[in-house]
Image (tube, rainbow, N blue to C red):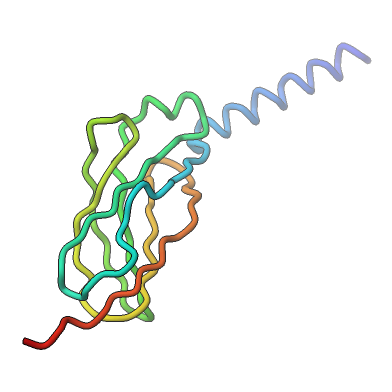
Length: 126
């Protein structure tokens, strides 16, 4: 009876590990640098790191996407890898003034991050 429990527990644990590996685990995204305020229509950069939580995912090729949302407006941008492993940057312009919520999707597994909130000001009249 004890051997059956151990075998069952082992099988369940292996199934759990295989399921997590198949799903890809999680990745934590941290903003490395970003402006406090931006001007609508003017290009700026956001740098961030993506740290996979599951050891096998650390060797995956990651191609993250950056999403900016303001009300019913949503735009996405691809990011490029920096020299240091796991670090990326995206250069983009927000099309309108307002409070924009910026998030990153690692596209490799479940992504966890604290969203970046940027206030885009209207361009100054010339």
